[in-house]
Image: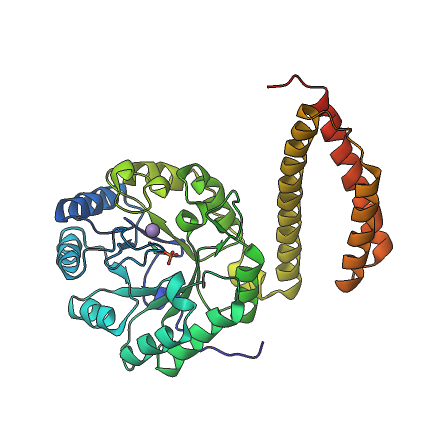
Length: 364
Ligand code: PEP
Ligand code: MN
């Protein structure tokens, strides 16, 4: 991809003393009390550089809580007055931009459902023409790097230089471990294309559930991202949106203190082609294993079905067909067919082993 961005270094608009930037706050601003209490508890923990809160919420289905709008901006201004924490809000329309600027929101972000639409992004870029405010762009919901890059180009064409990327993962067609699969290699590729562009991880929206927050956050730090945006709420289970992925400000504090911040030389690491390619390979390998694990989970179900219906594990015809199909698909993908054949022999052996294990287990 041929693209160039002129980016103001992050430390010129937010001082984090060289530490990863932490943006923390509730998914949504719900009530004045919730905003103020959450803000003060975040402040007391001492980790946050910026407070986030959704004022307008893009919801997949109608009827869900869609944000409190302008009154929420007033509560956020009060939160900033009490804590001194700069504010970050999501904007999806020129009207959101206008109101956010009116209330002095410090950092704007463009949500994943907006980045997918060049018309919307252009409207935002037009509304921001000549405004010198940091804008963070979440990756689009679908894994299309060009859309992500295009959003930055549109903002840049409006004169914006304080830009940063938020990697929040990509939506899935099937159910997976993650609410939004990280597909790390896309963020790594983004960093390879634009080494100067700050990369901020959003473990909350990748995870979808709090149990996965720590491992994702550590992974983000291991990849030397410039920071994280994490959702935290005074009473997570009672949150009006994204309840299952939020934690209290104190739980977040404990988690952040336990994470290891790697001392790797960030710039050099990512601008080094070799390191970037190796990171890609590591991530692809991890995904390969996740896919294999998903395959084995299906195999296990299949084994149970065969056991309960008294069908033999090995169905020779089925296996011959799998064999032929995979070899054909392999050449279509530019893979050496013999390699794929060998690989699937191993996969098949493991699948038989698993099913035999299931067969000999007691019926539930
Ligand atoms: C959010 O940050 O609350 C949000 C709506 O995120 P995303 O755009 O990543 O879905
Ligand atoms: Mn959210």
